[in-house]
Image 1 (tube, one colour):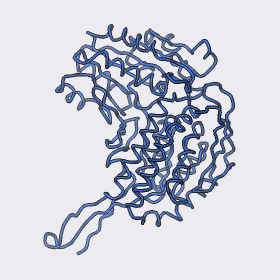
Image 2: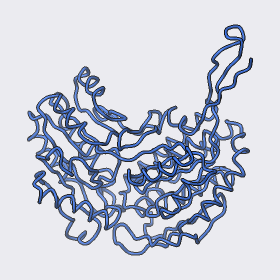
Image 3: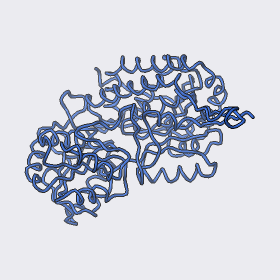
Image 4: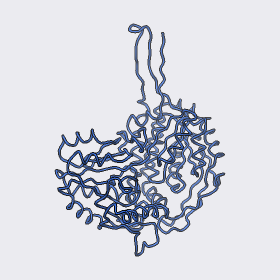
Length: 484
C-alpha cells in the first residue's frame, strides 16, 4: 500500500466529472503532517441544481427498474467495496487519519450494509386492509420511493455513512445526491467510481463535496423530497428550518454522549478492554455513539481505573499508515484546540481529575494533530466534560452506588443515541435497558451498527432510523389505494 500516491477527488454529477466547482476549492491537508495534499473542488448551488436536475430526469426510469435488477447492482457494489478494502483503508488514513485497522473495518461494514439492503429490493410490500365482502371496498397500501433524496454526511467515517444511507435509498428506488464533507472527500469519490462500475445508472447517484452553501442548496431545493443528515445539532437546526419551509421530511443522526454502566457481576477485564477500545481506540474518540462515559459501581471503581490506565498505556499512538497503531490524529488543528480547551477547563474548573494524558502528544508527534489518550475520574455530573461531546481520545469515569444513581447519571444529558450495560444479571440488563434514555442499548459487547437492526437516537441525538426495515422505510412513503 503506497501512502505517497497523491489522492484526488472530483465533483461527480452522475457519470460527469468536474475538476472545478462554483464553490471554489478546499486545500486538503495531510492529517498527520499538515502538508498540502490536494485541492478539492467544491460544489455550489449551480452544481447542486445540475445534479438534482439529472436525478429528476432519470428518477421515474430508476423507480421502475425490476427490483431484482437493483438488487444485483447493490450486490456488485458490495463486492467491489470488499475487493478494495485496502484502498479504502488507505483513503480513510489520508482523509482523516483513521488507522488502517479502523479503515478496513469500516469498509467491511459498508459492504455488509450494501448486501443487506440489496436483499430488501424485492421484498418491499404493503398491506391489504379490507375486502368487498367485509367493508364494501378493497384497500391496500403500497410503498413508493420519494424520487430524489439529499444525503449530507459528516467527516468521521464517510464510507460507513454511505453504506447506512445510500444503500437503503437506492434499494428503495430513489435517486441520490450526496454532499460529503470537504475534509474527507477521497473515500466518497472512490465509492462513486465503484458505484458506476457496479452499474448504477447515469444520474441516479451524484457526489458533490461542498461548503455549507452547497448543503443549503441541496436542502432547500424544491425537487429534493427528503433529507438524511449526519452531523451536529447546530447544522441540524438549520436543516430542519429549511425543510419546514417545504414540509420536507428529514432523518437526523446527531451524535451522543453515551454512557456505559459497569457492574461488579461481569467480566471486569473484558469490560475494561471494551471501554478503551470503543472510545480511545475508535477513530481517536471521534465517533457519535462511542461510550465515552464509563459509569462504574463504587465497589470496583478504583480497580477499574487502574485497569483502564494500564490498557490505555499499551495503545500505540502514531502514523495511521503504520501497522499496529491504534490511535491516529484528530481531523485537524481546530479539533485539537477544541479538545484541549475542554481539558484545560477541567483543570481550571476542577470538574474532574485527569489521571492519564490530558495534553497534546509530544516527541515525534509534537506540533501535529495528536492528543494523548486521556482518562478523567471524579467527574462532576453537570460539568461540560460530562455533558458535551468531546470528540477526542478521552474517556471519563463516574461512580455510582446503586441502579437508581447509575440511571440518573446515564440519563443526565440532552443526548440519547446509545447506552451500554456491562452485567451478567439478565433481569438487571432488561430492567435497566427499559429505563435508559437512548435509541439503542447494547449489553456486554453487543455492537450498535449492524445493518439488520435500527440505529438512531432521540433528544439532541436526532430522530429517524438507519438499519433494518425501519432504515429503508425512511426512504419510502406509503400510498393507500381503495376501490369501492
